[in-house]
Length: 487
Image: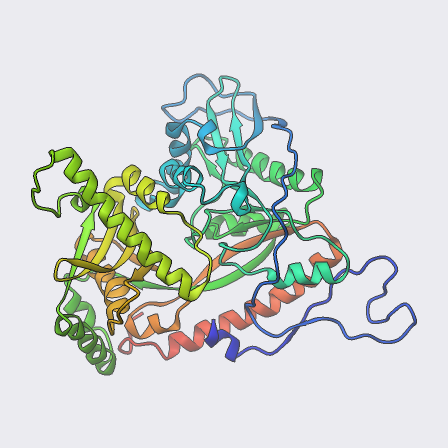
């Protein structure tokens, strides 16, 4: 977040010291300087080895009050009690019941593909989000007396802070500096996915607020019972963020860049809302794709299978082989990106095959071809009112000017216009998105810290950080790429 950092002054970070320390003085009475953070976001310190905490599967019962009727689809009358428990894999939950909770939490118009059983189970089954990678599933389930599921929470016990996109590495450093342990911690999120959406997924009943309260209490009790440092809920909805502020959670904001569809009928119509210099630059970038003899294709679901000719195989085998070709190629592109940028790939090859097979038409794969060869790709998922751009990569042997912008941003805009979607969410970070029509929006996270001293210190830091983020967002909006009067 280079732009944000350029406007930030160092922020003091005062930790909770062991009992034999005093704030501002050493044991000898000499004044000592408090640790300081000099950036909004920061790098990582070596993570702890994965360590599993023994967790009792039962979290107790919660008594419901008042009266009400259940939404159609859940049998019986209003329950008197709900039971809360932990499962160590999403496979222990019915896919239909998990998805019912997710869909009721968002509503059909805001359907979020990352909250689905298909996506989350693909992460676990492919060994991407598992104990061996520092993500131990600890999902919380709420059931009524008839064993119907009323709510679920995607939750992970973590031994590091990678793959979260809300950075707390320096918090861990501060804990370790004063002899405290930060890991393991609990993380309520969709792994490796900086996409806003509800995190406490509850069926649409007249007592859903009580189920919400019970699940939040269970999250906090789990953190305390097993003497963990903290619980983090990242990229929740704004509504959840506001509700959790009254339940002991610290509030944090971040920033992403999203494209807004103003009822455009074509890409050229979108360009006419841009300032002349920005419009010219985008057109020049798109011309470079043609000049490099690249062909762009948007493949959705089964269309990935149908982009082949007959080669003497049975139809089913041919389609399977060519789908594998696309996902294998995309995995290689993804590895090229991670090798150059992060060093460690979060997702396995099997993840892309599993996810592509399970999610069908919810997947939009943008590919670039040079002749008959795939040379780049960008993975998107389609939601109820948004297109979510997630991953990108290209062939390691060649450089294609402007191809990243075309595959990730311009093709996504064209797809959103074609599908009549309101928004394109292009992932985390990247100020270069602004001049291409993607403007800053807030993201949210909530943090529950057990140590009161650290909590107070981090709370002060987050207040200052929020002021800085808001300032940066205003500056970026004021100097945005659109004509005056276009919001």
